[in-house]
Amino acid sequence: MKVSREKAAENRETIVKAAGSLFREKGFDGIGVADIMQAADLTHGGFYRHFKSKDDLATEASKAVMARSVVAWNKVLEDAPGKPLAALVEHYLSKRMRDDAGRGCAFASLGADAARQGKPVRAAFAAGLRPLIDILTRLVPGISKVARRRKALATMAQMVGAIVLSRAVDDAGFSDEILAASKAELLRN
Image 1 (cartoon, one colour):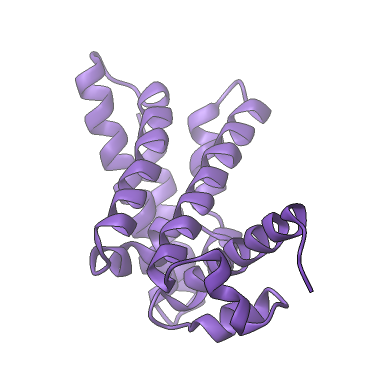
Image 2 (tube, rainbow, N blue to C red; image 1 turned 135 degrees about the vertical axis):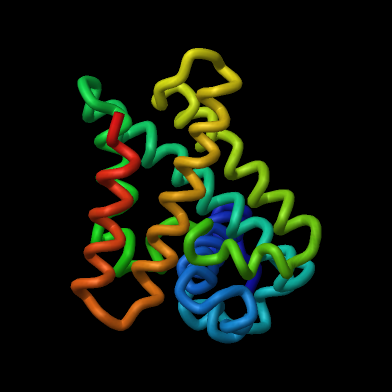
């Protein structure tokens, strides 16, 4: 049975969304095409009508996840015009972000994996990181644009690192302490 263009586009989006979540939960190499297609409620055989390879899907899913991050960050800022940096740090360094890797930050979930992927995935990560750094550059204090960009890069690295470490430990109190300490340090003037 032939699928309409609209339905094919909808199926492709469903696959990308399922893959984005599963990759963040299990890593690029921790999940197979069959599992992704099952999560998308589509047949395994249809995968190659949409993507050349799993790597092709990994690239597209990474781009989609990161594009949604930019939208989410802008929404946080829109909802907190008085203290935008504090709102963003609170949003990012939250228990929800820590506890729900499948819907959390791709950098925290897949950063180490991305470093071992091919150029297209690493390029998607670089392209996805730039707008977040631009947002932070506008928010962090500094006497020059160069100083603010340096601070933005360090802020992003600390936020990602805090989520990674808070997920890595097996002690809930210690995990909470990592998030709280990072929030306090990032928001200290």
